[in-house]
Image (tube, rainbow, N blue to C red; front, side, top):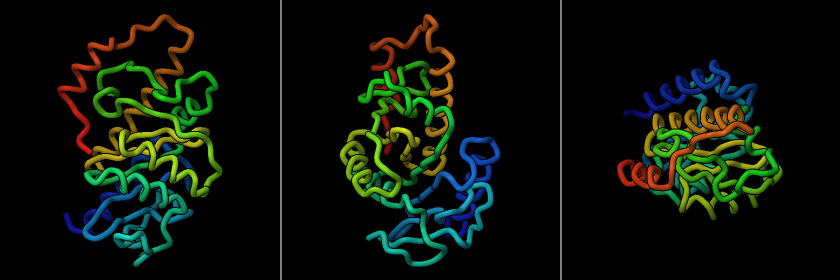
Length: 212
C-alpha cells in the first residue's frame, strides 16, 4: 500500500469510527507505521473529518516531518511502538463504555474485563489498567511502555483504550471488540453471568495467538 493509500485508509476508518459514535468531538487518534516513520492524525482534529493530505508524518525518532502538527498524545503511540516492533498501527479512543469501565472502583487493574466472549479473548486478551495521569503527562508514556511489552492493548484510567495491531484493520477491529465487551460488561453487572473458563481461554490463546 502506498503512503497516499494509507492516508486515505486512515481517513476512511476515522469517519467510520466517528459516525458510529465510538469517539466524538476532537477526541481519539490513529497512527500507522510506514517506511522510516509513522503517519498520525493531527492534534485537535476530528476523526470524522480528516484531510488525508494533512495527516502528520513523523520520522523514526518521532520528529515531525510534514502535515499538520501530530496528536498531542503521539508519545503514547511511540511508547507502544517502541515495545512492540511487529505493531503496524495503533488506535486510541475515548469510547464511552470503555471509558466508563476505566472509571469503576472495583475492577481488577491486572485484567480489567473478564472473558465474556471468544472474540474478545482472541482480539484483546488480557487488558491491564494504566493508572491515571493528566493528559500530556510524560509519566503516562512511561507507564504505557512498562506494560506494552506484555500487552498489545491497555486501558488508561478515566481516559480510554490504547490498542496496537499488526495492521490498521486489526487495531481498529480489536478496539471495537474491546468497546463492545465493555458495553456487555456494564449490561451484565449484577447479573449471574457465564464467563469462559480458564481452559476455554487457554485453548483460544493457543489457537489464535496475538500477532503484534
